[in-house]
Amino acid sequence: MKIDNEVEPLVRATLDAAVNRDTPRFESALSVFISRDLTQRGVEIAVAVCAYVLFDIHEGKPSESEIDELARDIARQEQWMDVDSGEAADLLRALVHHQPLKNVLPEESVVVLPYLVAANLLATTASSEDGEWWFNYLDKVEAAIEAAG
Image (cartoon, rainbow, N blue to C red; front, side):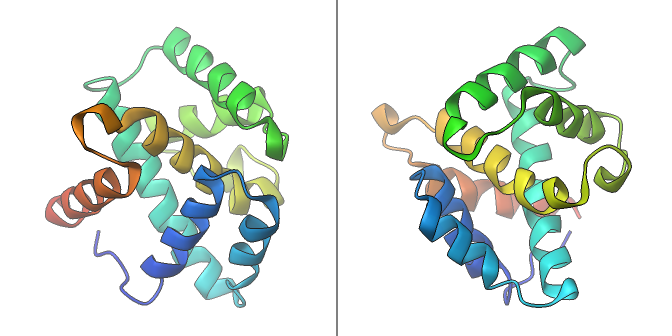
């Protein structure tokens, strides 16, 4: 997949707001996606990031119990946006089984949840003790996504 250079900075700003749990900034960042096309292109990047990190942290396909546990952790950590663990699990399962999100999530969740899950996965996986911050990990993820696609 080619990372869209027009949309990527908008995605990064949205992820930053989510990582920092800044509700007004997150909502403002989402509002910048003013067209259906722009929204779709942004969500595609967020979904690709989610999928890459999900498979990276599990060194392949996660088990059903790993998905459920991760979804519960995400819901607990992202309470600031009322993330539902069932929806988070549905998103993760859709990634594992290559299903369109629109088939498993409500329309509003398809636009918002991938950013929240991607931000959570990036922030909880990057190791600041090792000098890697979430945005450095995002750079690596995006490079890997482009190289694969």
